[in-house]
Image 1 (cartoon, rainbow, N blue to C red):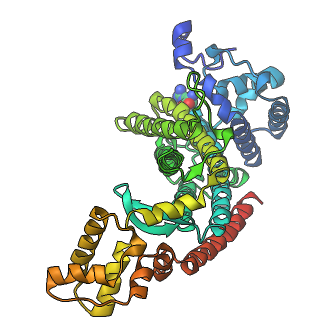
Image 2 (cartoon, rainbow, N blue to C red):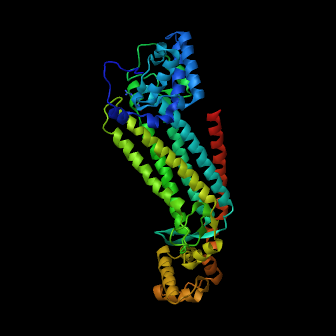
Length: 475
Ligand code: ARG
């Protein structure tokens, strides 16, 4: 059935039909397209624009399709897209009067509406899953507020911290990813329906009715914008690109930490594979694939932006090409989120190794310098110089951090400044001891167990509030 013959007596050839069809990825908007047609037809009937009896027949057919599912549609490429396939279905049941459902509506506003309807659900699902991930990070961090690890800058030992402090850094990254999506949701959840092809219609439609039926916050104020805007898609894919970037960084650390050189964690077998030739191998494949898939998201973002950049207002068929990249990006990001979540809660942590690494390489030197400043009132730069020499000499003479004493430091201090520091040995040992060192960083945002507990508490509150927010949207 060709409902759109219009001025074209003879349509496209088969190859061109297949080439231009969106049916393959329109499966994502199947249910949304029914909802959109139900809302529009209901409104047309309510406003007296179409006959009530005909409207009821159309609505019955749409509800029948809802039950039967997408397989009830003829998805032959000659149909072009899901909107036509759906209209064909209704026409088969209702007859030519089905054509009334397309009064004051275009596929241009329809597809924009459908995409928004589906995307808002996906965003909420991803938001929910980010919260679950953060919740598990909170649980894991709560068990490791005293688990010492070394922190890195430039991937060189920098300062000791705790595993909890590190995990909370992941959690706060994810919190922002969540908030970005929450903000984007506001710009997704607006209704373009009623824009029709581009300038609305002369039929007296009621845009508030369809907005309410479809659960949008508002309708789009400008119909040309309504049919052409896809920034809500670019923005979502950016948010998801940032999310997977953060996940990929986590994966990078899991890969690094599970090497023989670090030996800080072991990733569970469920997320590892072996080599087909080297029987001893345990490879972190899931983390590597997640790192790889992150690049796919960037590709989708650039594809979407570059389709948009050269389009004149309003609808251009190029817009259709954005859709598969949207769904691919959404799916990749969502899968990556959940698998990285599962993987991280399955890791085994080697706490002894964490402490060993924290003690190994003078990662506590900053605090020795800080304490010299506090105790002796000398400038930090001078203390920095003295402690730098302490580390160099200790490395040359093979002296461990717990063997450094006042005598050792004074020799260097005298050499560099002409003065001895005469620090109490207990102060030197406390400064150089990783656990004491961490406890001293008792500043909001810092690693001391007290401060980590505080940020755990704040994050728990955030989770409770956001779960309420999501529940409200669903109810
Ligand atoms: N399949 C199209 C898309 O995804 C629907 C809108 C088609 N509109 C048109 N004027 N050909 O964008």
